[in-house]
Image (cartoon, rainbow, N blue to C red; front, side, top):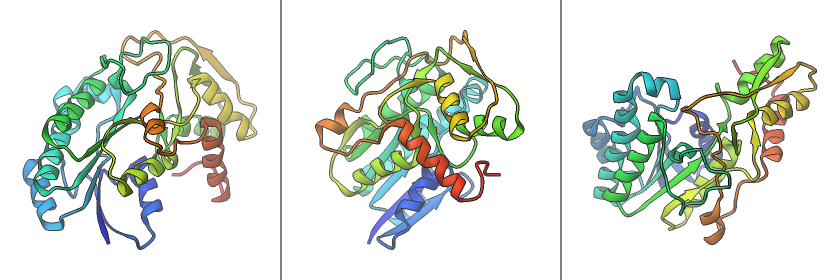
Length: 284
């Protein structure tokens, strides 16, 4: 039975992975910061030596852009040194490390989909700290997969949840018309992670749902699916920090024959349908 350690197991992706892996096929080790602080070399070393996982999946991160700007030291401590510590121990114990990264490693000033061979130049503290984590992994271990994704949503607080709450409260919603990316369901992303749990491929990969849209288009799609008539106001945001265009191309998935996530509209509808089946859109 393959041993899998999921760090940051209680966020979007960790929750989705637990659902996919709850089959009796894997022995799961799931931790949050309270159990293991990935930024602590001693805690990571002790946990790894005690449990000896075959695969480590690092979902632990500080992802809030403002939080990263307010406390850069903590952003680098978790997003960069956390990846370093896991890479060090994974290399020592000859296990595979799967690191979740982000579209924010790019400048966001491009105007066409970015593949894994395009030049990275992050502008946010969040993006810079995640890129530093990638670089630690590249230099410190050979058996790794770095998965970059974008606009990930799932159980918990995120942009999709914000729109749903506006619908629930019957209040207008303001959405950007000049920020573009690929909304990606945590469930679809988890399916890609599972492919790398089971195969021997290594390297940097992009993993996003097919297609792209603006924040405004995404909000409109959610409101329509929920059967609401609240107003979605298009706004043009002047934000020098957030990437304007960060659409990723899953080139390496295609080249290596790994199944890509489905279209973003299909994935979004599946997610919203699942919430409806559970009795409502909002998860408290």
